[in-house]
Length: 245
Length: 77
Image (tube, rainbow over all chains, first blue to last red; front, side):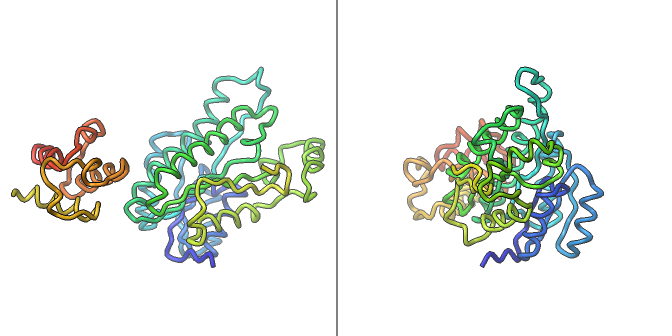
């Protein structure tokens, strides 16, 4: 089950906690992995840890030209692009009344527009191959909303709509497009929250604990596998029960 | 029949899984040959590759029939 050998997977945001764990999990199942991120040093470290079948593909997702070039660079490095995991994301949290245009645009550009460009760049080869897997990492707050995160929630909800539309267009070509929506996962991003905020969120999680990057990676491995070929346009919520949607 | 028409026909037959004699000049990819809209995009991609040309989106929209495709490629190649 869930054998990914000979599959080539590009993971964005692989320098972060969740992205790195997704890359490790895909690699452990046999995939060739392309590690993308803005900061090259952590990507190099991860590639060294993984050993063979790991390629470092630095990319600044706020730069449209760099984003357009990434799928091509991935295919050049790995030989194909069978699995795309749009994991990279940024936050510019602020109350809506104080939301500046640049806070809105930066989050939309990286979290939504870059993902769209990467999907567009990847899907052509997948159509020709009659096989492909796209997994977009969204967030529970894309469904529930969250005070202070109007820009982030809008981008994540946008990814869901994009994924469902693309899923319908390419379903007959053996390509699935799904989302994984993490809840409260322990990463550098959630470390920024205050203890009070953390306690408040944990109180709303029936499982009673924060999730781990490995919980998200397992969901991605499933959706990237051949076994998940009948699952498309879906959002797999991995949130300890904090939102049962 | 020209070499270009033969090569275009081969792509259409292979891609859409239709009989060769159905692929006549006036045959519409969608109405006569059973293509869906994504098939037409894929056909254009295949033509671009086979003939080493680039078919812009607005031109691709005018390619509705087998005859349109052959004519466009003859002019572009």
